[in-house]
Image (cartoon, rainbow over all chains, first blue to last red; front, side, top):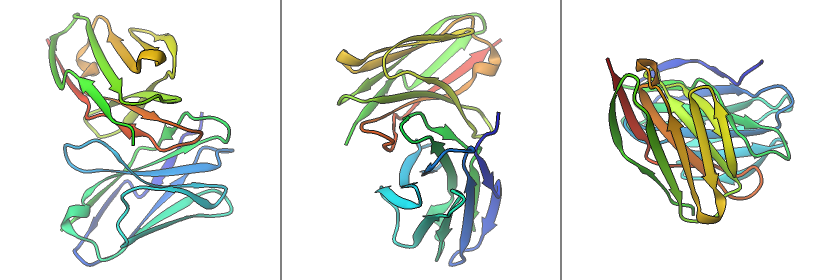
Length: 112
Length: 109
């Protein structure tokens, strides 16, 4: 069965650079969620989209922005990167009317 | 928001042993999921279980929604079961998940 696809899987950036993470949800899934997991921590919710509209927002820094496109894929844009942004970034998707979230393999971002 | 507590925080088992992991929620949830995070960082869906009992091979889970807790049972543990087990809950349709702090399991030979 098709799963959530995230790209890239690994990304190394320097401080103050910009990064873009991409997420392709499971086919027919219309809701996308982004989570950030710092080293040794549990995943924390950043933001979610339903039918291309932002549906909820967590502790997402103002330096980050995200959107969902007409084909339902989503992109997380991160600017002015800081060392503390080094983390695993997960995307999850779900189907409207259901609650179960399916997680992608994650993007490991390292900021040097 | 919802608070999620997991216990125990750490667990060391010998191969073949059984274990029970617990997850308590501060409020009612309509989405409850268990995950296994492997050493490579991948979050593997184990169960979607807002209520009732489910089994999948050596793993089973039970959620008592009225008492706001869930249990994950691992039987005949294997070294490949090592990793961190997270429970996560959400309230409302298509809502964000709040994760517990996890149980770090190490299975030794």
